[in-house]
Each structure stands twice: as C-alpha cells, then as structure tokens.
Figure (tube, rainbow, N blue to C red):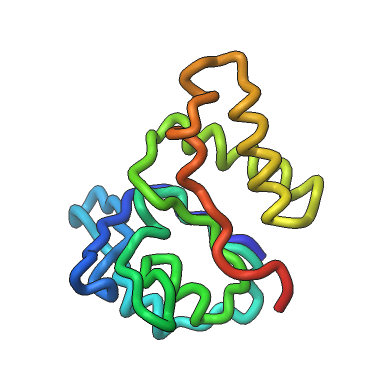
Length: 147
C-alpha cells in the first residue's frame, strides 16, 4: 500500500533516467536503483510512494511532460501519488516530517492531507530549526489521490 524510501538520491539533470536512488550495502558498497529501472516496474497495489531523499521531485522540465524526476517513473508504474522533495533536505528534519506524515496518513487516510498536516506541525513547532520552511517545504505530493 505504501512504499517508503529513506536514503540518498542522485539527480542527473542532463539525463533524468540516469538519476538514481542510492542504497548502502555493507558487503558490496553502494547499490543504486536508476530511474530507467524504476520505469520498467509496475506497482498495481501501491497507493503512495514516499521518497525521503534529496531532490527526488527535482529535474528537467519537459514540455508537455512536466518535471522529469526520480518520482516520475513511479507514477508511470501505476502509483497514483508520490511524496518527494524539490531540493536537498536535512536528514533529521526529514525523519521528523516523514514520521509525522505516516502517523497522519494512518489517521486521515489521505496522503495529501497527511503531508499538509505534517508540514503544518513542523511550521508550528516550538523548535526553531524544525519550523523553518527550508526543512519541510521541499516535500510535495505529485500525482493524484484517486486511481
């Protein structure tokens, strides 16, 4: 129902399909999942993908196609909605935001409303570093809430 990736992303603005999600593998070093590999996958039962990594909604703008980003192949694979970031994000703030997002998603059932509630909670936080928009404003909901 929900896929959550928490890690690193490397964006290739010149060749967006070479953008990738980076996994740490203690035995073999870095492993990557490229956007062109994601584009070949299908996600018939996945309702939401959360990409808690840097710049996963960032990319080149293609006329008639919109932003070509790491988030886009998930949409093409049948995921109706992807939560992704438009710029580089802080690890601790992202952890705080996404934990709250998942709590809100469980309570509200709507990923767009859950993201909004999580962002508003960060904005209203007494902790100054969490309340700054640079820590939570990068995340957007891409897609739709209906299939």
